[in-house]
Image (cartoon, rainbow, N blue to C red; front, top):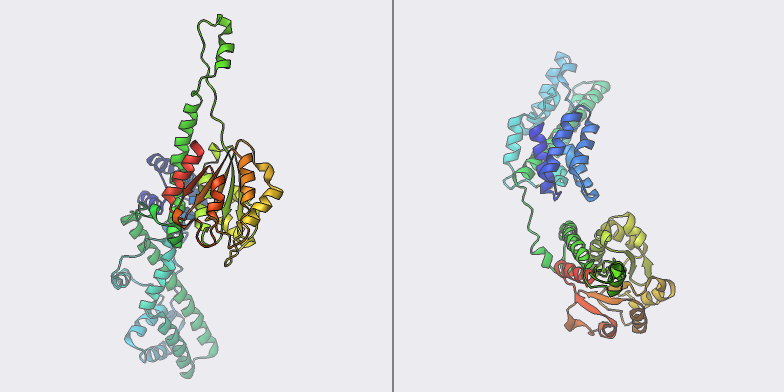
Length: 458
């Protein structure tokens, strides 16, 4: 069991779950105290000690049943034991009409014999490539094993065999009984193959724990990401957010003892007759308030999702965040991000406002913000717009951004397009530019992280 737990922890790490040595020790101590007889208690003790981020729970739940099987595959039934000697002789005669391979598999099904370790090794040898290291491929690998054993032909041969038995004089009740037994044995053999496929994948995960480097991925343009690359970046966001949170907390701590506060110093020193002076400093540790308006159209979705992921991972360093999303209209989405992970929140928002072709209208979104949410802006608020500034030739309402800039502390624009594209085609970026305190190009996650770091610390 200890070896299996070590492999399980290694597989979790290979899947991107961060587990320290101390947490591994806690898991072993918990199992030592609670035992393994109660499988549900065993599962919960491992999850409580190894998983510290709710986002990693699905990975844990996917791997646990593969490492710690709830039960062995069901036993196979011996069909021969239910036949009379004459029926067994007729069945053997019918089997001789099949090919050698089909005879071998169907005889094992009739005799209630699972695949032997040697036969499983022969199956493994048919696949020269390395097995996948993702547990979600277990069923796929099991189907490859079934194909190698010609299960489709086996099923057809079984039907032909049963038909032949009826022709040889077996009564219908006996044929139905044999059919049920053979079908149950075939399902049990499939379960054996699924278990073997899972074990192969787990061995591959333990032997090859290295994950592909994300260094190049951090600089990959967001609009060119594949779904798999985006999945990897979602996990990278958590690491970057942790590093940002540490830097922010340190800077805010230093800011508390920054500029000298003359009035507070004089008041504190009155009891000494102003000699000596008891120095007091201004507190600059006020947490920023943010209003974020994100374009979640097809070309901007990944950028907006990663931006919101970073911000909501840093909520302990931010006073409050009001998040809005728009395509052809504006919606308040803070409640979605407060109760759901960013990916799920974006998906839910898109169900209410699905993207279409050439329907982005930032000008109308700014109009709706002006009518319904202007009260969220004040002199402590930073307004952040995430978008490419393209309006599909609709009215950009740059006058409203000017109005917002007068009310807000500063206006930050995050645009994935390079500056040389601003103002081209339907881009209204140059019309918005005069009212922005800072504009950052955020074509990749590295640039996006640097922009968030800047806006939260300046």
